[in-house]
Every structure is written in C-alpha cells, then in structure tokens.
Length: 315
Image (cartoon, rainbow, N blue to C red; front, side, top):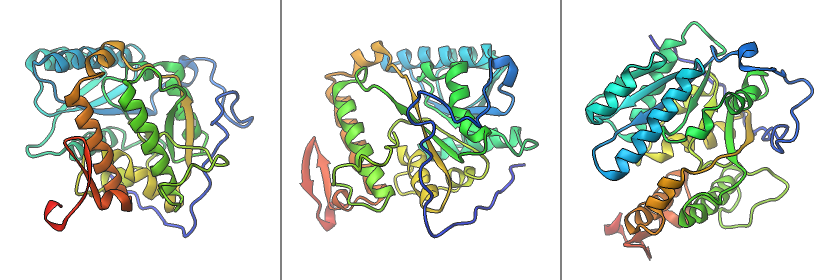
C-alpha cells in the first residue's frame, strides 16, 4: 500500500542550493563515501517507462535500455520499469534481471500516468524506509547508471540539504544540433517562469540554471506527491518538469548537480537531420511550455514547423 505524504506550502520559494553546483567540491558537512560498498544503494530506487516495437529506432533504444538495466543490476540498484506493450524479446530479457521489477501499465495510460504508476510501485516497495530516494530517468540514459554519478546525485538528499535534485548537463555538444538548441532555450524560459520572471528575458547570471529539460529527476518522499499527484492536460514530458517548478514555488529545496552525459552516438546519428524527430521536438517544446504557463506559447503554436498565432478554433 502506497503511503500519502503531506507537504506544507510556504509563501516564499527557498533559494536553489548551489553548494553542489560547480562540481568542484562538496560541502564540508556532506558525507564522503569512499565507495559504493561503504554507502550502498539500498536507499535508492530508479523508475522508468518503456514501450518498444520492432522498428529500427525501437530496436536501438531497447538495446540501450537493456544495457542500463544490466548496469543497475550489476551495482545492486533496484529499478522499476512500467512497460506499455513492448516486444516479447525485450520483455523476456528485462524480466530475468533480479533487480528489475517489470510492471505492465494499465490500459489507456498516458506517458505521465505510466511514470506515476512506476513511481507508486517503487514507493510501495520501499514503504518501510522513510528516507528513501527515488530517481526517474529515461531508460536509454546509460551514462547515468554509474555508482559515482548516482552517489553524487543522491548525496544532497541523503545529507538533508535538498528535497529535489536536478541533474544538470555540463555539455550539450553530443546532442543532435536542433535538440541542443531547443533544450537550452527551453531551460531559460522555464527557469525564468519558476522564479516569476519574464520567460523571454535573458537569464539572471546570478542564479544557477536548472537543466529542467534533461529528463532525470531525483527526490525524497516529501517531494514525491508533487509527481504522483500531478495533473496536466498534456500529461507527457511535462509530468516530470512542472512538479519541480511547483515544488520550488511552494518552498521545497532544490539542488542542481552537474553531471557528464554523452548522448548515445548511434541515437544522435539516427535523429540528426531526421525531419520527423525535428518536428516532434519542436512540438514538444511549445506544448510543454504551454503546460508550464508560458503566455507566449499559450497564444502561438507550431504547425508543420511554422510558428503561427493561435485562434479560438485552433486550440
């Protein structure tokens, strides 16, 4: 049975904790684990979602997902996978890994509800641990399932210094060119909205920028309801972004932790210059910003890659 945890809103958002931001040194009061064995990952559960067909893109992505699952399994890290109907080959390969819990999402699920279902299963598995740490990540982000990286991401929460950790990429150069441009621009607008500023303004260099468009998010039980109780009209990629903005505005502590991440080269080659992927990313960009409350994108839309003002009939 999943427990419900109540948060108490505050009127002023707390500052983003920057002590882990530069990546050069950790706070003096932080724990300094010497190895995975010393601290372990008993207090950490990863959760993700999968849906792989038999097309070339799905085949490539499922290979990356299985590699990620194997890394987690080899390092004693639990991962809950909500699957929406992948091919049997993938399901059989995932099911034999002891640390992987494979659950089948309910019919009619959205991308957002599938993520919530996986999180609820992860929380139920760890219901006896009030200090448990949960991490959402896309199943193809193999680089992040590394003991050193996961320890660094969980550390601010383990130290009681943060409720949510947003991994922040130090380099965008391995992404497809259009994706890199979109995500950095989207991060600027989303960070400004989070702080109550005009999304079109240049970023305030005195404040750290959260890499909100980078999917992975790490959080504790206090922050979990912002994700499990999220309701949005889109309910896709926004379901892992908007909860962070809401939690920050209501007083939860958010940390930005730098990570090195290389976008898989085979995936980048498949997507770069592909008009279908480019159209999809442009649509994602505008639709997510609408869910975040971006007034410009509430009155504009992308149609076949062209920016147009919306009319009452087009919404």
